[in-house]
Length: 268
Image (cartoon, rainbow, N blue to C red):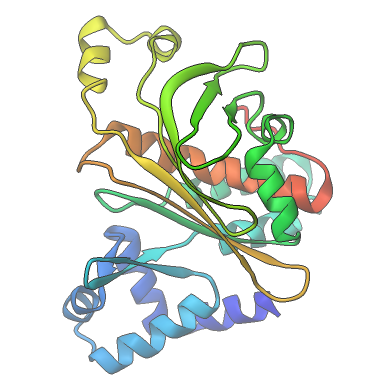
């Protein structure tokens, strides 16, 4: 069982040290982890294999290097499994813990998140591309497109708004397998919402555009693995900080919707 693999992975102190190291500095190579923990390459590789199998660590290649990331999703799932058994006060305390886990540190230039969902690749693709479906777990916001490579993507910030063209494009689209598109920049409506000065808004608008990629893989009968990689950020990007706090909540809501037909409240 998945839970057995998670608890087994966490039971070893060396593996917990690896998770602690990634929590402090996410996106490390095997060489960096060996040096930081003073462990042999063979030992670190062995422990990373166990952690990856449990879904607690995920890896992404950048050039010749393989970078490793702490993945909070399995721990979030453990919390969600038993939340309804507690009274309101305890549930709130667990929710606070869940939010803390979701705010795991990121690398300087990309956000990576992996989760397992009891659904089919076709239904997950629908959830990522159909505005009516997206609106449910994104609470009225989200994109719209014909999802053909090169096509524009329009976006809205509220269910009552019209879809606006924020100069986003579809980069890759393989139904049921892979979707990638350019991300939007900061918009005037955001400045109004957050009360940014003209100077701050102008500075934020200078940030390099990023892109988000969704990889869909069958992971056993009735289960799909979803990997989200949001990258191409510059170091210390404010947009990276924003999406790293936002994606875990949205993806948790997506998972809940696909598995139960219900959604969570994302209000603070």
